[in-house]
Amino acid sequence: MARYKDEQCRICRREGQKLFLKGSRCYSDKCSITRRNYGPGQHGQKKKKLSEYGTQLREKQKTKAYYGVGEKQFRKYFEMAENKKGITGECLLQILESRLDNVVYRLGYGSSRAQARQLVNHGQFEVNGKKVDIPSYLVKPGDVVAVREIRKDNKTIKANVEENASRPVPEWLEKDNKTLSGKVVRLAAREDIDIPVAEHLIVELYSK
Image (tube, rainbow, N blue to C red; front, side, top):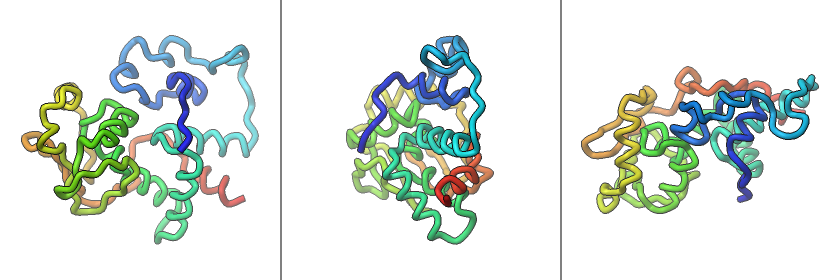
């Protein structure tokens, strides 16, 4: 899958808000939004009036950036959401929240979703006792996500656990700091998802 390989902070500046793509840096004075709160590029400081389509497109691009998902996979998730019972936009966010890399991030074992994705890729985690190295793996209620026994001395994960000790864990997850694990109690509801996304705009975009 194609990945965005340019400076991550440019994405936040383009969207005009923090997307928390670089972990602790986003909470510091080094954050690009704090220093340069305008779009990247030569004409970044010029305010542009977006069309209806442009507004919908930006919302989709912002959501893709939040979760680190490419267009092809994002479209696949939208089609899955359309086939589920409930409101399509909310189902889409629920599916994105169910990704293993997002769960690892939500549990505080990754400083960002990008780092969580890398840790999963490197085989640091298991689901229900079995090694899973696919970041897009979708968890289900009752699943237990844990740091593998042979990886519990990983310095990056240890540092993240200490740094994120005070970060609140969503109500749909249960975290056990002693065993470095977390349980999926239920799927995420819309009120559990704290990212500022107007999902109905994405539905309108794909429905055209």
